[in-house]
Length: 109
Image 1 (spheres, helix red, strand yellow):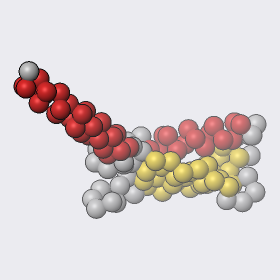
Image 2 (cartoon, helix red, strand yellow):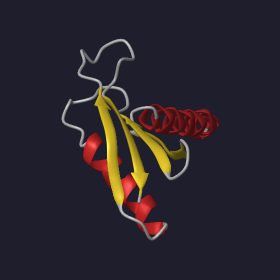
Image 3 (tube, helix red, strand yellow):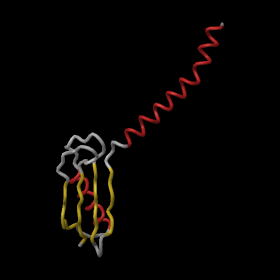
Image 4 (cartoon, one colour):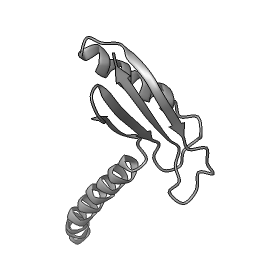
């Protein structure tokens, strides 16, 4: 009977630790996700899209393709065609917060 009370008394802290661990893992994984900015207006029918890989990049993220897809989607929503003005990629090395990144400047014509 005493052993059951001791086991029962330990369960609430274990459950709260499991919950805390789950929350920390979720937050950590969110930091590893690819982030996107844009499309942001950069003048008359000009826009900028930027995509950056999260922590621990493999170097094989399709960032440019994803950014171009966002650009095409924006121009299609306006009933126009996307024209690429420039694209810049971060070539590495991917250390100390210098993650893979691409910036696309485009116009909708």
